[in-house]
Image 1: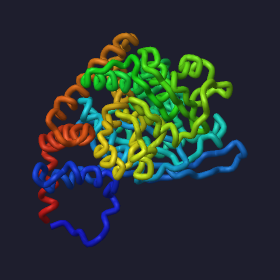
Image 2 (image 1 turned 30 degrees about the vertical axis):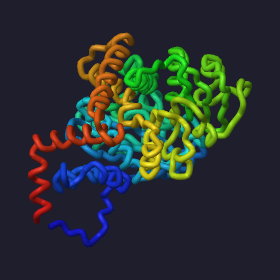
Image 3 (image 1 turned 90 degrees about the vertical axis):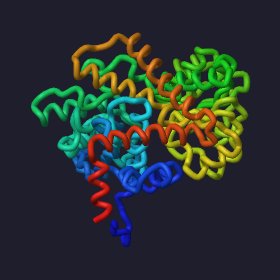
Length: 427
């Protein structure tokens, strides 16, 4: 038997909590459960950056490859002051499930730097981005692990990173990173991909329960790329967006906000100062009486402290991990339908996959093809989850997790890895 007398620091605690309700001994073996409760590879390192002052500061950095059973690792790089290894492990785990659920040939990964980018100049951000790749280049590659943008990173930063990788390798390898500028091999439609995918998922669910997007009331927490784009898309489709928020303020109008004016009149991620509507708190936005609540900001916004106050009928998780594991059962008990992040915000990784395919073939798609393929694939994936949930007394999250886990385990099985794990367990 395995030695369990010491704490296993490799285990992802949040992942293990999530898996404990899915990976029951009735359906999964000990070897299968053991294979999924920890990442394949974790890197903790430091990134030295020469600041504008001439001084050198050193920042903590991370990259986790959770699974490569179904293909190269895939996952974003975030710059945030609260990034830590446990968060990155959990997000890499969710990426592995997301890629499996939407049936693209990637595993799951995630990375980040512990930094507040708002305190850095443009030059410092570029030097930090390049330094991160210099430390990481041996562990990424177009067939190994493929980074992308995430919180507080963007196409420009991916451009610095793919250029730095090219300098190190002596050749331009566009497929090593996705979410790049178009001029460096990026894909049409990547900017709005996450939001457009989420809008199609919501539309599919509403049709499933015989409702229309038109006239549906929506509150959206977060007004960055994802929040602002899904607000615009749903508004254009006839939804009534009654509330939006950025990091500093939330705005509410029961009759619906003029989203076009907000998007056109504000800076990225910021609600215009001369907004219409009544200012409320971010906390109040989450508990508004609306048909659909869309958390599109950061993790762990709905907790045991506010879960019982949620009035929305449906929560569309456009942020990664916006609901804590202990709040989920409270929402389910109250009949709130949660469309989980691993399908709701999978449009981004899906178009990242399209970009990777285009880089591999050197054949670039028109935006119409990107949008058509995104809609087809993400609605098909979600329809499979809805079909799986028929007659089920569990949640869409549990049904989606189980489907994704089955696909990952099947890949591990046909690779022959489960036999190896079983031998180690029995030593």
